[in-house]
Image (cartoon, rainbow, N blue to C red; front, side):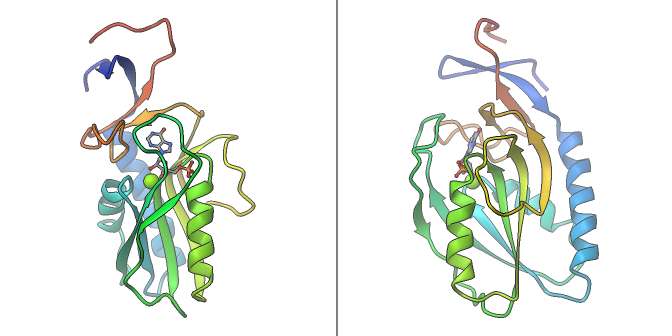
Length: 187
Ligand code: IMP
Ligand code: MG
């Protein structure tokens, strides 16, 4: 893994390695496999950010399962959320009476996941739980829990492993965070 990356003039430092992500996903999947034994949950990924996490998570799932996607937009090209969530693609599956697991890359303000919860609950699922690879500590103003959390992180801007900066760098294999100002240098 390279030491640091400079993107659009901002410097990012290594934060969570491929190995750490893989190990944590195996442990989350283990819990989900136990909790959903004998059930056929639908994993609902939130595009674009969650596609890599969902792809890795679902390959550790041993119970019968289905999947579908929402597509939301809230960030535009900035590092700070616009505070407005737009639904760009709705589900194609039947949610009523099903066990639903929503899969997010990161919960930041909590706005997106609350928006999704609201949509899904109207369709009367049998159960509804939330998985997020990352949860920004102290930031989410949520009145419900994220049931399966990969890593609780400080409220820094992070990239890689599905997470973008102005739509780029989703293809990085590990997660980087914005380096504190004053420590910038090019790698
Ligand atoms: P929220 O609605 O503020 O919780 O954020 C929702 C979405 O914004 C996440 O699903 C991500 O796609 C994106 N996001 C939040 N924080 C970051 C970040 O640090 N880096 C890149 N994308 C982020
Ligand atoms: Mg997302």
